[in-house]
Length: 326
Ligand code: IDC
Image 1 (tube, rainbow, N blue to C red):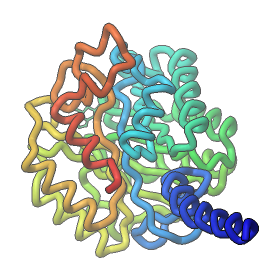
Image 2 (tube, rainbow, N blue to C red):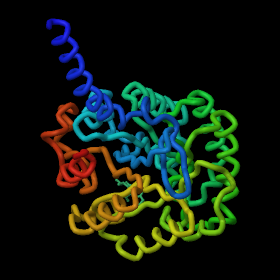
Image 3 (cartoon, protein in one colour):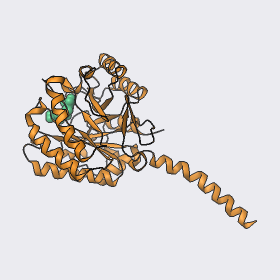
C-alpha cells in the first residue's frame, strides 16, 4: 500500500515537473542549441520553429547603458521571457574605432552575462554614420576574428555584421563586405548564425531578392520605427519572404526614426501582429534610460539602476507585455 502511494506520488511529480521543465527551458539555449535557417524560417536544433524576442542595448559607449547588469538581464529573462539580448557596439560616435579595447571588453562582459543566463546574444557591429561598412572594414575584420575565435562553437552568440548600411548598394558594397566578414566568422565557428544589414538603414530588403549570399544560416536585417515606417514596408517584407529571403528584425522602435517622437501604440500593434503572424524574430530599441520615448526605462532610474519595474516608460510596459509568453 505504502509502495503504491510512493509510486503514485512519483508519477504525479514527474507529470507535473516535465511541462514545467520544458516551459522553463524551451526558451533557453540549452534546449534550442545552434539555431538554423530553413527556407525563411528560424529553427532550433530539433527543427522546431523559434521566434526570438528581446531588447537591444543603446550604444554601449554611453553611460545610460550601465543598467546592463547580470541582475537586470536575469529580470528580463525571468519576468519578460526575453530569450535574446543585442549588444549595440557603435563603430563611430565614440565607439569601437575611438577606443577598441574598452569597447571590446564591454562586449565581452555582456556576452559572458548572456552565456551565464543561457540566452542568445547578438553582437552588433553598429555602423551608422559610417554608411558604407567598407569604411571601417579592417577594424571589423579584426573585431570579428577576435570574437568568433573567443566564442567559437558557442551557440548563444549570433553575429550582426553591419547594423545599418546607408548610401550604398547591396551588390556593389554590402555583399562583398559580408562575404569577407562571414568567411572570417565561419572559419572559426562554422555553425554560427549571422545577420546581415541591408541598404537604406536595413530597410531595403527587396534588394536581396535574387542576390542572396551563398552561405547557409544567414538572416537579412530589417529595421523599422513604428511611426515612420508603416504598411508599405510590411509589403516589402512579404515580397522578400515569398522570394525566400529570411528576415530578422534586429532593431525596431515604438516611436519615429529619431528614436523619439512619442510612444506609438497603434502602429506598434500593426507591426507586432504582422511579425507574430510571420514568426519573425525581433529586438526592441532600446534597453536604456536615455530621455527619448523608445527607451524602455525612465531617466529616474539613474540613482538606483536595480529598479527597472518601477521605472518603465510607456514603451517599456508595452514591450514587456509583448515579450511575455501567455
Ligand atoms: C539613435 C539613438 C539616439 C542617438 C542616435 C545617434 O536613439 O539616442 O543619439 O542613435 O547615435 C537607428 C540606429 C540607432 C538609432 C535609432 C534611432 O540603428 O542607432 O539610435 N535608429 O534614431 N536606425 C534607425 C533609427
